[in-house]
Length: 106
Length: 515
Image (cartoon, rainbow over the protein chains, first blue to last red):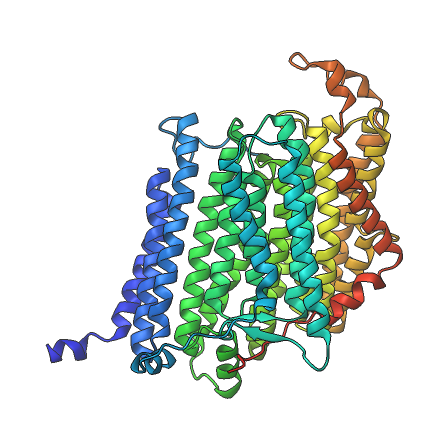
C-alpha cells in the first residue's frame, strides 16, 4: 500500500484528467446525437474536477476541493438548461441529430 | 489553508458583507426572482406591466451603482472589496454595472413590442434578462476566478434560454441549441484554464495569483501558459473573437431581435469586463506572454469580421459579423494593457451598447411578424415606407462605421490611439483597414434603404398580407429606444467628454479583504 502510494503521484491523476478532458472534447466534436454531446460536456467538467482535486492534494490546499462543489452545481444547472433546449428541439423534429438542426446558414 | 484553520476552531467566522457594495447585484437578481414567481401566481396582467417593472428594477440598480461611484471615487474611501475579498467594488465594476443596466433597459423596451407582435406571453424574457445582467455584474466585480466562472455561467445560462425563447420558431430553438453546445464547450475550457492557473500559482484569487506571479519567477511556466490560453478561449468565445466566433451569425440570425440586442451589448460588455479584470489586473506581470496572443486574436477578429460581413445578404448576419469586427477593435484596447487602453475599451463598449441596441430596434421592426424578413431585400426602399426609421438606422450604421459627429468615431479613435501609444503600429493599421471594409458593409445597407426604387414590390410576395405589413407599425416603446440610442450616439459624438472622463477613471483595481 505504501509502495503504491509512492508510485502513484498526483501527476498520474492530472494525466488521467487530461485524457478524460480530451475524450470529452473530441466526443463533442465527432458525435451527432445531442444527448451524447451533453454527456461529453459533463465528462469535460468532471475531468476538470479531478484536476482541481489533484492540484489541491499536490499543493496541500483545501481551496481546490471546495471549487469542485461549485462546479458540480454549475454542471447540474447546465444540464437542466441543456436538456430543456434539447427537448424543445426534439419535440419539433423527432430523432433529430446535430446535423439535421441546420436551417440557419449563410 | 485558512479553511483548515477555521475548521479547528469551534465558531466558524463568516466574512463580513458590505451590503451597499453588493446592492446593485442584489437589486437585479432578487426582484427578478420575485417577478418570476409573481407572474406565475398572479392572473394575466397588462402586458406592459412586466416591461415597466423590468425598466424600474434596472433603473434602481443603476441608480445604486451611481451612488457607489461617488463612494469609490472619493479619495478618502476609494475602491473596496467585500465577501471575504471575493467581490471587488471599484470604478470599473460600477461602470460596467451601469452599462449592463442600460442594455437591459433597451432590450426590455424592444421586447415589449416584440412579444406583442409574436403573440408570446409571460415575464420569463424579462426575468432572464435581469438574471443574465446580474451574472455580468458578478463577472465585472469578481476578485476570484471561481466567482468569475459562476458569473460567466449565470450570464450564459440565461442567454441560452433567451436565444431559444421563441417557442414557435424552429430557428430560435436551433440558435439556442447551437449557442448552448458551443457555450458549454467553451465554459469547460475556461474552467480547465482556471484549474491550470490554480495548479501553477496555488490560488484562484486574483490577488493571490498576482502576488504569487510578482514575487516568484517560475522555472517552468508551461502550466501557467496553458491556463492563460484556455482562459482566453473562454473569454474569446463570449466576446466573439475570431477563431471562436462560429456561433455568432447563426445565433444572431435565429434568436429574437431584442435578445440579440442584449447579446451584442450586455454579453459583450460582461465578457470584456471579465477579460480585462483577469488579464490586465491579475496577469499584469505576464503581459509579455499574453499580449502577442491578444494581438493575433485582434488582427484575426478585425479582418475576419469585416471581410465575412461583405459577403452576407442577411442584415442580421451582417450585424453579427460587424459585432465580431467591433470586438476586434475593443481587443485593441485590451492588447495595449495600459490604463488608456482600458479606458478606450470601456468607452467603446459604452458607445457600442447604444449603437447596436438602436440598430436591432430598427431590424426588429423591419423583420416583421415571425422575425424572418431581415434580408437586404427587405430593407430596400425603407426610406419611402418610413423615413424616420430609415434615418435612425442610418445614424446607427454611420456611427458603427466611425463617422465623425457620432460616438463611434471617438470610440474607434480612442482604441487606435491606445494601440499607437503601446507601439502596436501594424495593429492600428489593420484596424483602420477593417474600419474601411466595415464602412462598405454599412453603406451598402444605407444605399439599399435610400437609393433603391423597387420598393413597390415589397410585401406583395405570394404569402404576405401586403397592406398593413408594408406600413410597418412601430410601437411607442421601440420609438423610445430609438430616441434614446440616437440621442446618446449623437450627443456623445459632439461631446465625447461626457463619457471619456468616466471611462478613464474606471480602471480596475484589486483590493484585499478588510480583515
